[in-house]
View (cartoon, rainbow, N blue to C red):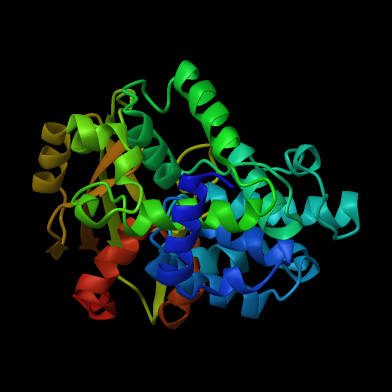
Length: 341
């Protein structure tokens, strides 16, 4: 074990958080935690981890579940393709692997929705196989150690970082060391306000000596962001029933439910519609940010003219339907009373 390995491992033993997925080697629970924590803070993901492990204690339980139940439990996490892939992978594990996770990195990569990061995490945490985990926290630590300005999401950057991560990995305790690197990046070598003054590896850190810590890591900018303009029409319920639509097209929020929606080409077109249509209520504008899309949403309540275009749902059962986070935010603000405006 080299000195950097020793220092980070020693730091981890003192500072690591008590997280439930660290108390198990069960690949099913580790896989669940990794999928939930993608693009999700640990504090938020913890509640969902417990919800899923309680509802589906085995991969067989998850495979047999109705997709709508899975999406309901996922509600609030966003990026619903993760939930659909989670469900699809559970079915694949049962149908092709008799409910057992492959015990090799290469085998894990054959699972739907499992890429190099997740495969390395399961392989090392469950089976102690020597595969370095590269998440955002680890990329940050490695880029600062080497003072590398190569973008972490470039082709060359990925090759360079993978090579260095594999060289740095503690081959005898890969699972423990991977956890230590991830935790060190999350709690100590933070994106902003890193704790350089009390860092156990600062003498090895080239970015620290060159005073470039805050400039790293470098990341290529995302593709251009698409702007979309939505008006959700809440049709005044009759006798406690309300209209919902299920999204089926290959677009955002596939298989989730929404109020009848009109989409417009630009803000002016949307504003003209809001001025012309008869409605008893209009919400503030909600901006909902997705990875490559920004949604600008209004909600209105109006008297229905046609109830044949969607599912009529009892208002009291609305919570049973998986809905996008944008609609969930609106309901958090206004509550169910808005339906009786």
